Image 1 (cartoon, rainbow, N blue to C red):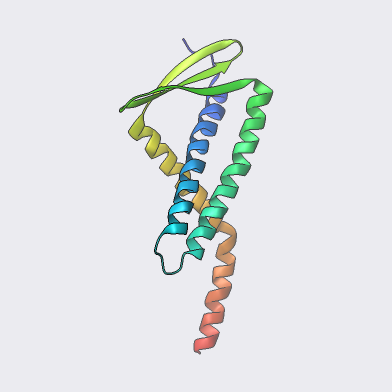
Image 2: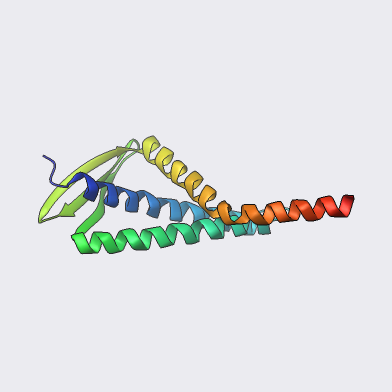
Length: 137
């Protein structure tokens, strides 16, 4: 039986998967830090912007969850599935997620964060292209 309203479930699952995306970004930053990349700064900057975007959104989602008194807790894990317990209105609702589906959802969020973090930089890229053209011609 579903005890959460659809919008409450949307907020809680977005918070959950966004939190997972932040963990992935942090791990990737560590790999870039210790990796043997010739020029790692652009990648680290991109990951930093992505993490900042994710943290801002997660903070807002957490605020909404606190206001609605919604909590999410991991309740179990095996090779194929991860279970989460959604708590709201004095009810518990358990949901199982297929691990490859979790990975795909987190990947989609990472692409979304990448696009968001790139938007302001596009106008600078255009300026840099113009400068490069001026230097050549």
